[in-house]
Image 1 (cartoon, rainbow, N blue to C red):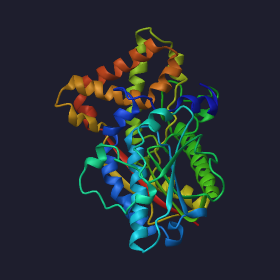
Image 2: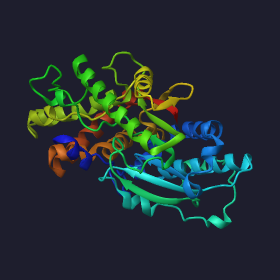
Image 3: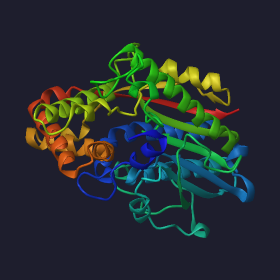
Length: 391
């Protein structure tokens, strides 16, 4: 794979509703994160959004963008959470509830058809009443029964402009901004000190510096694009995988995943199934920033203000679906493999250029997870959360 455009065409999460689809796997993979993030999102909207902006833009429409929506019910839960929170804020302030438009945004390779088919029925706006907070946990595992918003999909990279100027009141992005627009050029250049041959992810300080530079470029582009699209006083809520270590080579959850994937590549090489070049030219387009790195980019770009700083949420299980495996190590291995397929199968298939080899790759992921079940269970994932206001 060469170039940004090629990556955009294969980076989407695995579509459909099968066992290895993102729609199926993400329900369990993101459940604990959603349970923690949802009340934070509700609180920040009610406490931080200005009443003037809550009225909506032109014609009284409150426009929301979920950037990196993928498929499945997680994005629907987010959309419903945002709309209900704004409805409650309007009602408590004795304000007229605006009409809502939610834009689901992802790359062209995303399975928008599955997402659109999963949309709940639209509630008649004339009959809409203010929502109350959900007391049960059913809303975390089932799609909302109805929606009080108009829905649209937008195809494109969120590192570029996607909407007309000053048309969005609220942006949300979860589990997306740690994906880079491309693998750093120097990492795949054999003549560069940052060449990463022999590894699929950050292996040296030079490689780490190249990845950080790419992340700075990408996240700055993201902020600049949203600065054009979000109205003054509009807000943005972001959640992405981060790291706690000052050592850039210690990439937390992504570091664990990369070790597992590299071991699968190495086994295929040892068994003569692929050439070594296949691994040497494969690099994960991901980066897990620290709190300080994320804050410094926002301050440098100057369009947004972080409310009360970036928060670090630690200790999420990297493989939370293991709790459903009933101590069955083979089942656990299969669930880990399914999770990796949902996120990385398109990338791996594009690299190996073979469905058979792709299946062999994930079979090795499954076998390693089965054999090292207890080791995998100790892997943890850290999340960075920030609420930003357009200056």
